[in-house]
Each structure stands twice: as C-alpha cells, then as structure tokens.
Image 1 (cartoon, rainbow, N blue to C red):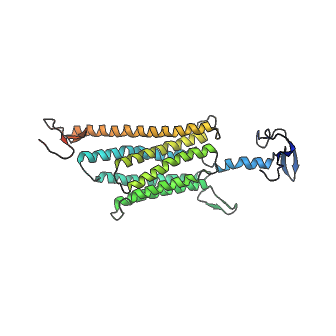
Image 2 (cartoon, rainbow, N blue to C red):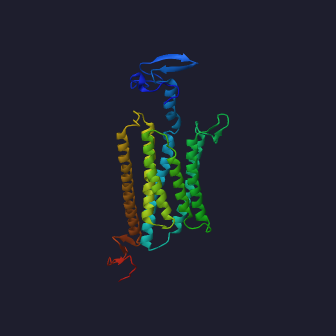
Image 3 (tube, rainbow, N blue to C red):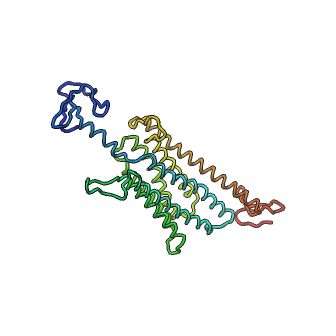
Amino acid sequence: MVSGAPAGPSDGRDRSSCRPVGLGVCRRVQTHLKNGSQLLKDGSCLMLGILRVHLPEKVVRMANFKGHALPGSFFLLFGLWWSVKYPLQYLSQKANKKSHRSYSFQRVDAMEGGMKIVFALIGMLAEQFVPDGPHLYLYSGANRDWVKLMNWQHTTMYLFYGLSGLVDVLTYISQVVPRGLDRLMLSTAVFVEGFLFYYHVLHRPMLDQHIHSLLLIAIFAGAGSILLEVFLRDNIVLEMFRAGITIVQGTWFWQIGVVLFQPWGGPMWDEEDHDNIMFLTMCFFWHWAAAVAILTVNYTLTYWCLQRFRRSSGEPYISLGIRQQKDDPSSQATFLSGSDEE
C-alpha cells in the first residue's frame, strides 16, 4: 500500500481496472498537479506508487548475458577437461598397477592451478572494468550508497577460485603444503560461490529466483563431493562426479543468461508463469542427463584411445578385467591381481 493513496473498498468502485498500461498510465484516471508532483487519482492509483513498484526490479537486475556466459564458459571448459583427465589417470594407473599418481599428472595439476589463476584474473578484471562496472569503487561517499554490489559479488567468487589455483601451484612446488589442502580450498571456493548466489537473487521475480536456486543444487552438491575428496583422494567416482557437476554449472549459467536476457532476440519469458517454472525444472535435469552422456562418451573414448596406443606400442593393456601382452605368442591372459602364469 502506498502512503497517501486512498484505500479501502468503502467507496464501492472497482479498482481491478486500475493497472499500469504504460509507464504511469492508468485506466479511468483523473490527473492533477499537487506540489509539483503528478498524482493519478482513481481511488488507489498513484504515480509515485507505480514508480516504487516497477523501478526496483530494473535496478536490482544489474547483470547481463555476458556476466553469465563468462563464468559458464570457464566451468564448462574445466568440466570437459576433467571428464578426460581423470579417466586417463585412472586407466593408466590400473594398467600399470600403480597405486600412486605419476609425476606427469602432478604437473598437470599445477598447470590447472595456473589456468585457474588466469581465468580468475580475467573474471575479476571483467567485472570491475566493464563500462558500467564499479572500477574498484565499493562505496560512494557522495551518494552514500554501495557501488555495483553484484559485480563485487562476482569478483569475490573469482577471487576464491584464484586462491584455489594458487594452492594447486604451491602443492606442486612445495612439499610443506599438507596433502588435501588443494581440494579443501577448491571446496571452499565452491561453497563461497553458493552462498554468494543464494543472497544474489533475493527479492527478484519468481522465475529469476527459481532458475538460480536450481544452480545452487549443482553448486552445493559439487562443494560437498570435493570436500569428500580431501579424505578420499584419487577416487574416480568422486572425480567424475565433480567433472559432471562442473559441466552442469557451465551449461546452466548459459541457460540462465539465455532465459533472462534473450541475447539473440525474441520475446522475454513471463517471470510469473508457473508453467515456465515447471519447464525449467525439467530442463535442469536434461542438463544433468547431457552431462552424464558426456562423461560416458569421454570415458569410453579415453579407454579406447589408451588401448589402441598400448596395443601399438606392445605395452600391457586392459581388456575385460584382464591384463594382456601384445607380444605373447599364445595370447595368454593374466589377471590384474598380479599372477604371471605361463
């Protein structure tokens, strides 16, 4: 209820037809000027009230499509890379009967950390120095107001992923860093992302809140699984789950940008239509199904390529749970348990 507007049904007039047609236009209204402000009087219609109702939604939504596509691309690239890296690491260890990771994969971890740092710096600079960005100003003394807090939240998210990359590099170059600290820092970064996005969409329209809440499912599920990796290191199931969750995050960031901002044109989504809520919930799990399909294809292709390489080089390879040697004239198989039967 707007202060100063006549209220109550006692005058018997139908106010259902008194709604904004354009900006500040009401049906069946009489206008006059009072103290320099235009009042639209029809029992309950007031120009000031209309402005107070409609403008906040425009003010709150300061993000854009690029602000969702950039982190979405980062997550998608890392998820796709992990969906190849971890099957390759697991199958290599299994074929060579090693319980520890090779030095080459440790170097890859350090390179990943460097890429995290680079991506985080790109993200922070983009959030701060876009034309309408805060340009490192957090608070405006002149206006007595915060400056572009949404950009600052995104910057904070990138900051923690950059710290995760730094810990990855330190883990590789120093033996002093405790084992598992890299996974703990990555889990912390994902938790921070989740908490920031939880308070990111308060007081938004229903569709906006719902589509971001679906993203929170993937974020907190990923944070929990990465935390388990601190104690269950090199667990292929957890690693593949992390890869899949990261792919879902990446594709869903793009989905959010497309739904809310329509970058390629077309009608905007009705943010109060419950059918749209139902469709997007279903669509979210289609993204999960697509991620599972990607994991399956990449695991299968990695296995197939690794087997081809080992057969061509005469090294032992894995086939249906047994260890075989190409140069064995009798094509005799020995079990992976380590028997050397002749």
